[in-house]
Image (cartoon, rainbow, N blue to C red):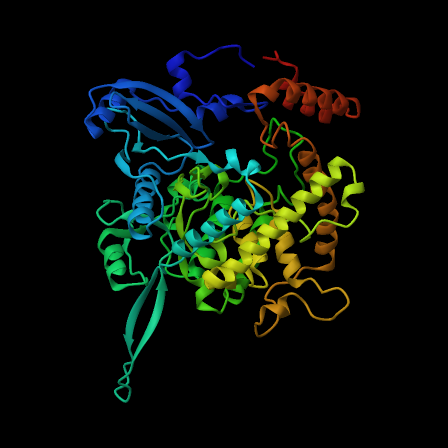
Length: 556
């Protein structure tokens, strides 16, 4: 641990919102981005015709970007967003985000800040990629949400339904007319080739971008999309992690859902066969691992099982497979509201993509679907203790909001309602998400999804596979021994997850902790280290001691 404190300018370039107990230098390096401050101020003045930039202040930073507020001489504020090195593929990330914001603002008429200037390359006077935009108006929703009356919260949920309807209003399908070759047939048939990937401007100059053919509400809107935008390589970070950044044939865009899902699995098989290192040393011995997790064969076998089942599990309803535009991080920190509770701005469109509906779309993060529905307080509410009362109030309020959201969605946005009612929607979303990083994250939950698709329903002879409405048996099998080992691993995996949940209020499984919690987190893991050493001997003890040495370094 270092006691070095960065200078004022370095604090603008560095990540300053938290610490890591292990791998801290690597984590901070991935979030350090130098830029030319004076050139950025000069550019901001030119953009709006101001004579001077009075101040530049870092107002927020996440895992992948930093945001700065520039106060100008004419009292106008600008926001500058600068991506960290870990934000995603160079050029593509910023170019796609700007095009996405323009698409949302001008095509879908969403409240998106206007981009005033941008660069997708660091070859400029600012010496970094950047986006200069209007400042989002009023208040971040998460700052006012706890104090809002239930009716006001419901009204915001209704507005979110309207926004979701707009996002799903355009289908990125390309309809190709195919003429049958037999002379006896004169009819034309249509086949749909999907366009799955990230949005770019049509003149972006980036390779592998393809023209958009959109099916929208009006011909005018369709023409506006097709003349200005294209679909290109996806910018989601997991597609570019590590050596995957050079595996361009797996970056899309894709013409079908099947092609997209098979590409994910084949990419991971390819990456694992070339780059995976079994039993890789780590500075976090509390991280879950297993024989299967370190087995190249176990990962490849599971991914091939997934490939074998893809043609059968894709929803037969074309609406559910249709590629639709979606905001991937639509939470209360990225939504702004005014004094009247009207949504005034939506920010952070980085990573937005045209996704198959059954994969991309999700209910609002404001809604807690983990609760048991309860539409009114119990009769004995007044006799309960205060903690129980608070929990019940939350449960009832969330139940009412969920009911309001689903009722409104069924009426105003039937496409979203259909997606939410798909019987296997959760399993399909999990399969797609887990397949993307079985080696970097965990194999167990991915394999659990595969096991669950074959698992016998309690009390009956039917299987979940049978409920997928497909002909023929499931194309893969698990032996009794594989199921036994998987169940044994499940107990250890769940124990690990419970541990990280128990300490999650102060530290993540990557060792991240808020700056104010660093001291507590450090002492916790130093104590865990001492407890762990008491039960170890020989090489195992030496290895554990070496990998946890950071826990006895200087606490700062």
